[in-house]
Amino acid sequence: MAHRCFRAVMTLPIVIAVISLAPAPAAAQTKPAGAAYTVPRTVDGQPDLQGVWENVTSTPLERPAAFAGKAELTDKEQAEYTKRQQASRENRDRRDQKPGSVTDVGRAYNALWFPVPGAAMKRTSLITDPQDGQLPELTPQALKRFSVFQEARGKFASAATVRGRGDDVEDGTEGGVDGRGSRADNPEDRTLGERCLTSGLPRLPGAYNNHIQIVQSKDYVLIELEMHRDVRMIPLVKRPALPESIRQWHGDSQAHWEGDTLVVETTNFNDKSPFMGAFETRKLIERFTRIDANTINYEFTNIDPAVWTKPWTASFPLTNMKSEIGGIDGINTPRIFEYACHEGNYGLAGQLSGARATDKAPQFGSR
Image (cartoon, rainbow, N blue to C red; front, side):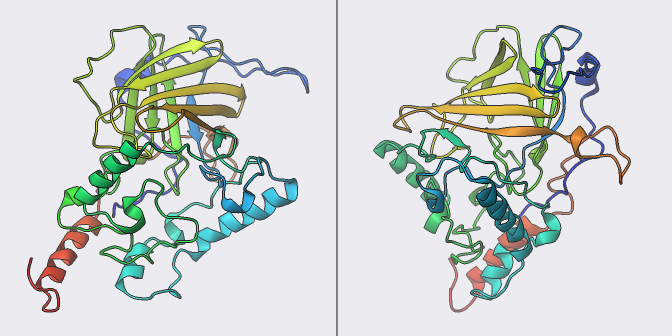
């Protein structure tokens, strides 16, 4: 397991050349109560999306079965659901179910490592289309390909399925080397996240490291994800698309403005980082729209007829960290930590050496 980082509000060593391109943020605009929001502009006249943003919310990607047929929560339901989701953080170190090494490894990170989950949205799912809040059905060939891919990596149980663990399956209770249905014969058997390679796109709200930094210049927009220090340098000027033979971890992205919305279209993903069952033929369309001084509405659409029976869309807010800091710590300019994923990390080496010890155990014999 990778060494986890605390929530970030401190320094980030960003590429100096990039920062030097970034225009100073436009002055904050004040409006009478009830007036339409005017998006601030950079010195180049573009909508200003710059800053450090946070994408935390307790709302899940898909609508939970308990809310089937219900698109939005009442105020009372929203408060109760948020309370339950936030309380789940405090239960991470429980040992009352299937005690032993599997549970110990599966729940190795207790509440110390996790910020309190953000409040749930009114919507019952991040998915807005289809309207039932569920992922579209996968095609038979997509299900088969994903199964073959996971089995080749030694995945089993829910780790070998596209939807992963259900709401009723607790971390560390499925058995296997680490309680998540994964072997540890080789580093390549572990996830790309555990190997500190990438968290993939799009970045959904997660347990920690949910910060995003946006820097703009006239011809480029830089989007840095705190998780794994993934940095995307996206051109705003039209350029030839990469040939199909060139595939990348984060694909090939190009951006343009549609009014006040930044639209980023990405193709040419590689086949090593599947997202919800999709591999290299997926097209991702992202939309960033600043709706007030402290909020960007982030929306993404995944398109791949070979994988999903229809495109699907999800959205959630990005919150300006300037609205959440200051006061006690006195920090007025939010910055994110450097993500030192393997610094002091003994988890992956421990997993591999533990698997070798298991191989030599008399009850298992050598392999």
